[in-house]
Amino acid sequence: MKFRLVDLLACPICKHFPLKLDIFEVYEITPPEKIVKCELYCSYHGGFVKDLERTECEVCYSKEIKSGLLTCPSCKRWYPIEDDIPRMLPDEIRQQREDLAFLRKWRDKISSEILSGGKPFNLNQVTSGVREKN
Image 1: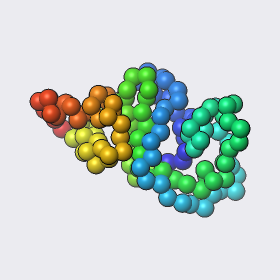
Image 2: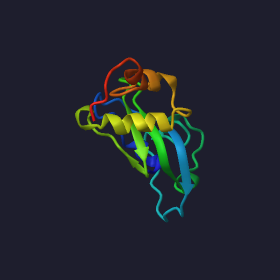
Image 3: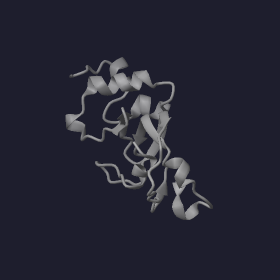
Image 4: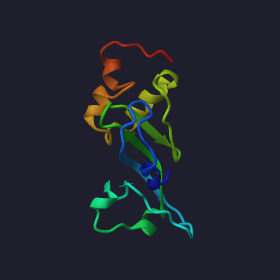
């Protein structure tokens, strides 16, 4: 996933913008000749473009996010990034078992707020006796 994508995404449930990006794995690529700069939000620098003194678009475009997490600060929903793909599915079609496995795998890099209270699934559901349905 490109950092640039965060400039285009909002939470599909509550429509909040921007989403918070946490990166777990990143790799280098050859940047394209044409670089499209972020319009509103630069996730590489973690701020609104209007507030940044400088950007490093060429450096940003030379990186791909392999694994990470997109989080909505408003509704506390989280969306995994796996194998370069953000998985921004509605709650009703998400797979609890897969989502919980993702949280367990990356628990050392995910905030305790998401681990214990993120939506639609979190690790407290398992410890409090809520059964996995998938």
